[in-house]
Length: 280
Ligand code: ZDP
Image 1: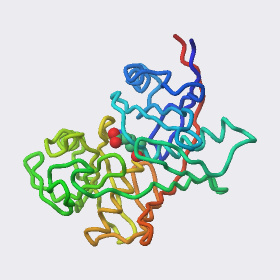
Image 2 (image 1 turned 180 degrees about the vertical axis):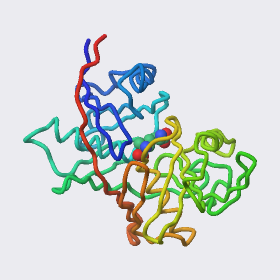
Image 3 (image 1 turned 120 degrees about the vertical axis):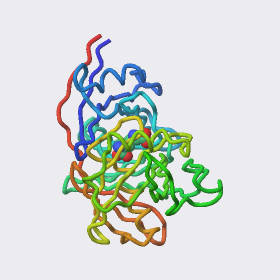
Image 4 (image 1 turned 30 degrees about the vertical axis):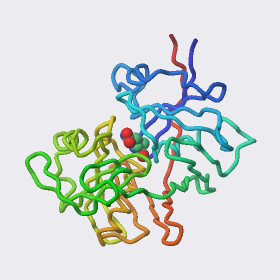
């Protein structure tokens, strides 16, 4: 059966969106997702995202497959794209705020009148067991701890936004050999569920530059959960303000880690590119 899709991107982090509202099982398998994400033999994307029926009193459920077929718990840029996709599907019935069930809990995106999407990303998790990482004792935090990767010692901070992130602050983010170093972080034995890795250059305490190596997707132009995790790490090590702009190769995300509630808010764009139909 032909399957309709829409292609969206958030700062160049691009996704194939599937209307899966009629069934609680994704209509595409992880193996098919790998083929569809291929930039030469497929549609081309960093992942495939499904809008499934809601669970536990939510409007919809989000599931996502990375371009390697693995399934992450959450996806920051992707959830902004999903919010726009749902609003487009609902047309005149569209709401300005949704509650979405994800493997990382309930996440609430808000469609603002200026076209940006602001997402309540929930509360970051910091305990080593929650990341998961072996860089600290299970019930301790891995903040500014050393790790040996690619014959070099790095100081890293680990944050879970539902999915695992390892953040390291560097002098010159442009000088990082992402393709070489990234996979060695992703597959390091200190990260039993593998990890996303963010390299951060602090320009000012409220403005940083970031490059990312994503678990299951490699080099991407932006990573929403990664930008959130980076600001949390920056606050924890005293390098960032609680409201910090994160400049990624694909553009800028505004991140705020609220002091009282401990919740993180991410604001950024989401854009429809085209729609199409996958034939058998
Ligand atoms: O955790 C992972 O395996 C990530 N590759 C998921 C995707 C994260 C994303 N780039 C984001 O914006 O948070 C979509």
